[in-house]
Image 1 (cartoon, rainbow, N blue to C red):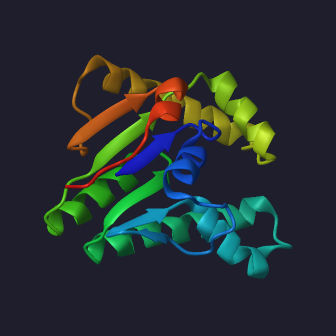
Image 2 (image 1 turned 30 degrees about the horizontal axis):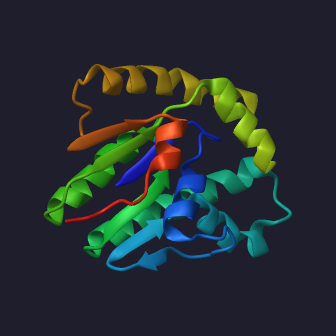
Length: 177
């Protein structure tokens, strides 16, 4: 299960609430047979080594580690609930392929909030995405969410749930069967 949305849309907030994450973890968190993986875990782990580097140099290392951790958990056969950028189709296809190889399926929860709301969320947490990257995320997000809201399939996902902020706030649990 991948939780996707624009930066600042509430992905980490949702994982915090559902799984008791504090935000200071440096590794995926075990919740029963599920691994909860947030990009902050990779950022926190690398902070002691990459602290003095500019964000532009840290981000690719942190994101690569995050993607690797998700892939590693899938390959190990764990259920996964992970925060991800939903705007990288090649990453989604890779995770879906890994899940199928293990007999699983990729499901998406898309948190759809207005870009202004997501931008405000970035400022509130003190981590603002650079303008060019933000524009790219928004440009890729619009067709993805429009397609999901229309009911059209979103390959490679076996299932897609679109939540607005209110629905995300009411979500009580994610169950794996």
